[in-house]
Amino acid sequence: MEKAKTLMYEGGFNGFLTVIFKSFKENLNVSDIQKQRDIQKGLFSETETVQLQSDKAKRVWDGIQKKDRTALKTIYFAYLSEKTGIEFLLYQYIHHMFFGEAKISSEAIKDVFLKLHQYAGMVAREKHRIEAIATFKDSQDQIHYTAVTPYHDVLPLLSRYYRSKFPGKEFLIYDNKRKYALFYNLLTISHISMEIPTDFFKTQSSSKPLKPLITKTVPYPFSRRANFKNSNQKAAV
Image 1: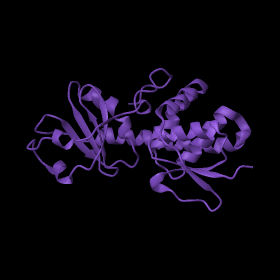
Image 2: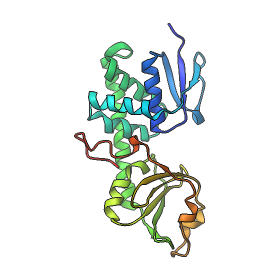
Image 3: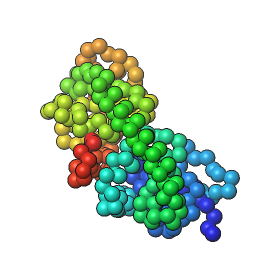
Image 4: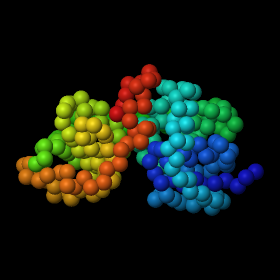
């Protein structure tokens, strides 16, 4: 049997889906899947880094949708929980979806699914909590903005709600813990990986412009947008 491998990726949902594609295509003996920043080598595991390939990630996502559309939301929400070991749990679940009991029994997969369902529920509740407590200010350049510190990585799930709440308004939501922001400019939703000074959010008036701080924006990949609109689930973002 091939020696077990720990597969590493750069982080991000598309990176994770790329790992799934590679592991299935090459029939790898996977012992764990970890983000590069969190890597902890197993005693008997080799490690291999998998580079993001959006086309491969999309093939996995589309394949899951064909197998079980209702699983899309559970998989994505559970991933955003950031729970330790979440990638390997999702790998087991998706592998069972495609290959049955080849690596994990139907009985064992029930425990995996219960955990994923629990984690997805936690993320859904955190999404609603942030929507309820977030308070916005207006910057000098008329951008609604706020900073939040969610327990889970829920920013990718907030766009749809705030586009409806603030029609015709640009807005920015900053995650204090993860140091990135969700920015909507009326045309696109962008992911901003940067650190915004904390004193900016302490300003009581619109005395400061926000756009000069937005120096580098990255549009959300397909899997961070409204992927559930064609399924039985409502669009989440």
